[in-house]
Amino acid sequence: MTKQTIVFLFAIIIIVVAGSCKKTNTVVIPVVVPTPQFTASQDTLKFSESGGKDTLTISMNGTKWNAFSSQSWVGLSFSSSTKATDKLIVSADANSTGSVREATLSLVMDSKTQVLVRIRQNIAKISYPDYSNPIPANSTGMGSDAKTLAAKMFAGWNLGNSLEAPGSETAWGNPKTTQALIDSIKSTGINAIRIPCGWNGYIVNSATCQLNSSWLARVKEVIDYCIKNEMYVILNIHWDGGWLENHPDFASQDGVNAKQKALWEQIAVNFRDYDEHLLFAGTNEVSASTTATAENYTVQLSYNQTFVNAVRSTGGKNTYRNLVIQSYATNIDEAMNHLIIAKDSQANRLMVEVHYYDPWEYCGLETDASWATVKNLWGAPFAQFGILPSWGEEDYLAAQFLKMKTNFVDKGYPVILGEFGAVRRSSLTGSLLQHHLDSRAYYIEYVTQYAKKNGMATFIWDNGGTGNNTMAIFNRGDGSVFDGQILNAYLTGATKGIYPY
Image (cartoon, rainbow, N blue to C red; front, side):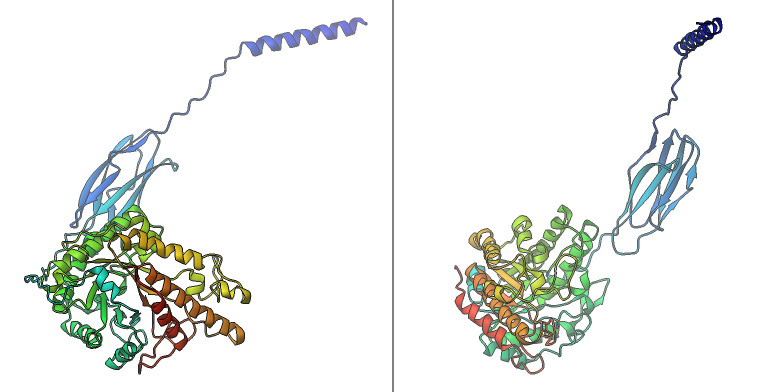
């Protein structure tokens, strides 16, 4: 080894040792990032209908916060601050909307840490005149309890898309209902009619919720067409523009119940002298447009109770009248899981209503959707002719109807199958059309027979339309039979179906 090599190696050792000593003695000081702290003194602000102001104390350890309101009726004294603690004044305009309203105040510190404050504003308590005008109870002609009366209904029919059309009985294309139409329907053997009815468009004074006397007279005229034929009649508040049907929520509950009470008191008083042939049904298909919540169920049940209380408060024959309450969305499974029978001053005078359009891809779907395709056939005998729905066939139907018998009929509450049916797909041709029509008749007969066997009085849906994807049985103009195949299937099912009471 040369002298130069030894010197070079010695130098490298010195450098390595020196570097190691230096590394060992180095102290790394960590950077401490403070935990964000950002708070508001309240998480909810509540205002009366007249509006007002409230104060939020905002505390932070950042450099800046900003405030954003989701609604224009909410005002802020300023929208940003760099102070560690500051007071933000939140104001609300007077609420003249007629509904409870809500807003959200978003507070954001340094563009990332967020606090949300809920803002809620009530409305003045809605109060309408008391229209109940009570008279002493009168049991004359009211001898049948719910089961006895239901057993008298051989087959029912819906006067659909007529009296519930907003603003005018003819607004949805059907002519005015006539005595001749009702006479014709009775002559086929049908002995009960459900009259879907609108009322909101006939309020003459919004401050008092007073109904137009001429509309009440027209509804009475149609009822009398039926009573003249000794038919049973169910009168309801139907879709009615959605003020009742689309709002099973806390924000709408007080206002809807007040309005419903005022309307049903007037309806009940005006038709109080009819005997047991007339029944009242409180609502139709009350449901939210989103997945149902406990709030929706609670509010919908309150609408049932308001209806029962309002009718009973009028006295006379309404003291004993049989009344019909609905499940949420008039759906069988919702009835099973969430329907609580309204309290009633009279025993055995309530019925439960559900509707049945299952499976929808067969009964009502008009064009293919992301979740299903249109099906033209239903029932085991028709599997040889094409694709059936993947669910909702005979076994499913029988199981669904048995649920209503077990949970309601057997407990003293007969069921009204207030609507059911399947559209007539007349745009089909040849054998496809014939198999569809035969399948449809099979469906109608099957539903009717098994419904009655399970204690459900049937009311087939008829919307008056005779074109593609409609459900008319009778021609509304002259009362003649439009769809004899469906009429025969319906009456055959009604004859085969024997009530269990």
